[in-house]
Image 1 (cartoon, one colour):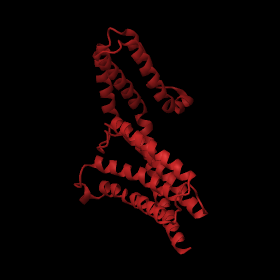
Image 2 (cartoon, rainbow, N blue to C red):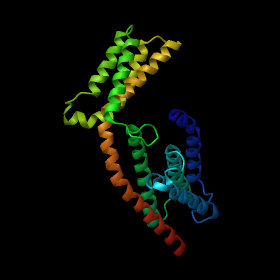
Image 3 (tube, rainbow, N blue to C red):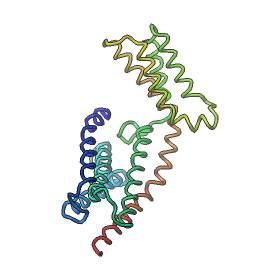
Image 4 (cartoon, one colour):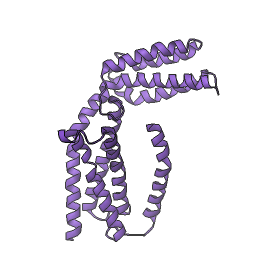
Length: 263
């Protein structure tokens, strides 16, 4: 489902980038004009409204206000399009120190949100808010391995590729450099292993597509299990850092609005 959403969103972001280029190189409006002002107002309100997701998660009386995953999608949507509207409000030009500070804070918080989202989906079951455990992922990987190695019995070379990836991903003593590099390198290795495995499977058939999906799921499950503890730590650290950044954004945004209307 998430892949479909990103696929359908791609043309929209292409149009947004094109409009951004046009606005940045044109002189259609200024931040204080009606168009620029209203873009900034709507974008700011969207970034304010996205905080309702935190209320939905934290307050007991709000826990029956719909499924959490839909609130998360709403939170992400506002967190993406709110800053985009604020950027268009600026006309892609920063005319004062006040605007630069507010804009920089917004970019930092939005970037932090994307990092948090990436870590979140690595340790949770989709967007349901239910957290995985290491034992659950280990059992899922074992079950997947039992099935896929039977399915791929006619293709021993493919099994060898998967076992090689498994050995690298789950190596218990990779050393300091290996531990540091593995979270960055592992997704690349996964794509390489997937490509090599698909080259050895029969092409252009329903059976090939089915086996290819098995391979993809197994490789992703191995990567996810290998990196679970790392992303758990990243997400915990992100929580500590992100909240003060949100307060910083709120403070700079309020000061920006006050300064604009005073001067």
